[in-house]
Image (cartoon, rainbow, N blue to C red):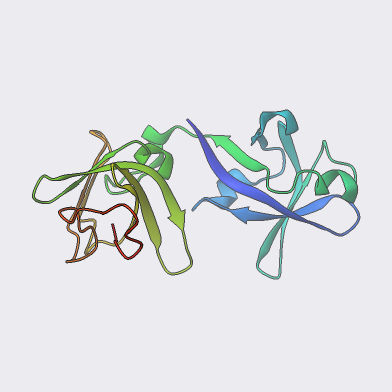
Length: 181
């Protein structure tokens, strides 16, 4: 399965290095000299890592296919993807990749269907589940108290929302700007 492991940021120096926003828990297994990464959009890759180093807490990568600063600047915001065997990746059944969750049905502990998971938003404090419902997008904090069960195999996420988080029973009147999901 192709998984997003990073995003190319701004250029660093004049030799074609770039900062990389790391989106993996295993950067040492994804970003090593000689690793070949697929890109999104595909037209910019694949890219082969020529050098990898940390600088003030930021990962800097140089790619064999990129010769200078001008070339790397054209790759800003390109996603870096690695082919990962998700079945062999984890020993613990509670571990998973975000891509495995996308499209999962989200239900409450009472069995009420909320919607379908469309994205997981990574924030500094916690992640948020972006759920598409018939009423629009609902953002749910991805914390154990609210999301007690994630069934990756059956693609079902069970939530125990606190009062007011969903307000699924409240009708939304057209033009009611104060209505909440």
